[in-house]
Length: 154
View 1 (cartoon, rainbow, N blue to C red):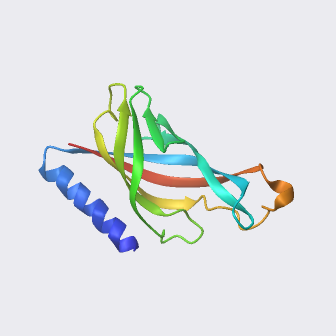
View 2: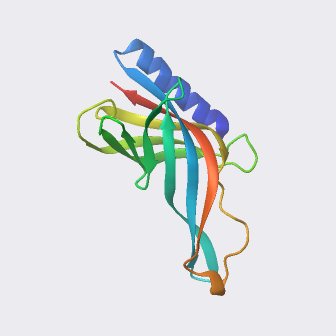
């Protein structure tokens, strides 16, 4: 499945290179927040959302990533994505790689015309495997992660 994501990402890069499109790459460092919730049969960890700082190639802070999933650049432009496909990360214990389609935008700026967001090179961020039982319902766990996000616009 990872090959699918790499193929989709490669296809998007090829489209960006040939069709007056642009690609922006930012690196995220932060947490994936999980909440212990009562599921139909037993309590289980559910993803609440991410909290991460986005940095450009120079290491300068370029924005943030948060619930939605949403990405907001320092210029105020925001894109909200909806997942299209995912595949297991090649790095054990890491959240999946994703391709997301932009479903909404806010404000003018570098993210205002993004069509797709691809999450690659993930490390960490997977849900805890234990610690969620009836006595812990409502508790949150913040699990560190890093990823590369590539934003494609035409």
